[in-house]
Image (cartoon, rainbow over all chains, first blue to last red):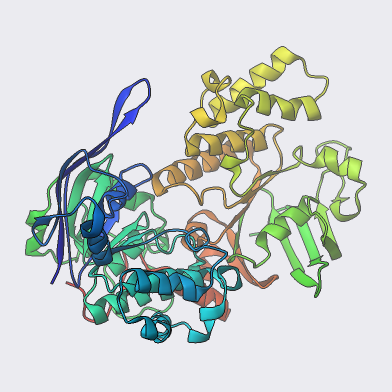
Length: 288
Length: 285
């Protein structure tokens, strides 16, 4: 069981001429093995800044990042060890893989650098990781341009999993993919999470997948957490007006057509409004 | 719902003449009615952008129109009730005159297609300089200011450079540019894909209000089917160069006919409705 905790995280960027821009203001967040937390908010809300601080690509201005209660190391071997534990999947699989290198190289590199398996077993481990993300191990010899977007993102996920991390930060992992394969990649992440007890921070602006793919939703607005709670509650019964605005701006054919049955679902549906949705005790933990 | 047609496509085919040749658009027939919003849904590589470029006659080799016709209705010189013009066979000079004047387009990634070293006022004025050469400079500037006011950017931004505007504002500038000559048909290729939902919603409302005011038709191209379902009168679903299904938005939603349409609809988890395919087995609180 691993827990990553952000406490009072604040980030100021220096802006030429006008002093500082407050990108994150006193953010508390925790990610635990086996659970998915969705971080939602519009462009510029600070979502990616959180990802960068978690992976220590940026330093926080104040506040703490704790892994199992201990402040994370800032440099050297300690930081490398931390980064084995907390891995990142980037948004653009067309940009995050090196076009000169084979799939094998991408996945073998963390295995070798972090001495995850003995050198002789690397080849077999690459094959195992590819199978894990449901790719044919024969793809190991290919280069990124020979793969589709969905296959590339699976390679990026396999690479992230190579060092056997406890937590995964996925920054918009499917927004660059075609819609018909997004579901496959998200379900893959969900299955891997369940199988390995992985903790996932799912960063997205898509409220619908945030709702269906995560346990908890944290809503970020201008660097401030304005609402958090169980996924269904936050979407179906938002307390903060910003969450409501986000939800109302998201396309929702069901609401639009007022109760028409969508394809591929059956049985009882909650009404488009929030009535009929059971509230849970956790709700009082939400703050606005 | 019978409307006067603005645009008719009859058996349009576009082939990329490479080895082997790729038929990017195959035998597509559809009409766009006056004042209608036609949604064109499909995934990358399905031919939706190629189709839009073909209508505008903007295809570059190796792409070429290999069959069919594109007819713009009432576009002739003879007044408001002009004659029909076949765009596919129109001389290039004539097409240059019609393009933007009658059919304008907001391109994919449009907000990054503004020239970074020219003010947006100068770029808007270009449209008038090209298509309304007799217009005086003062009038051009006034019209450009009005356009920026119309899309909610504000005339005071005429002297701004693109990097001084947010993504949403740049997209509005592109819409202003497309509407500058009061076209009868606006083709929008993924106009809001790069924007977040709040800005997207604002821009959609803006387009809707402008359409009420100016009465143009829209072909709205995107992979975002839930969005199309909300804003379109009819939706055409494209796959591998073909329109596999075309029907009224609510029919498409309630009673999709083609397997691919069903699959696309099933790819979008419902925001507020029942949990669909996305439910994880027992993992939810």
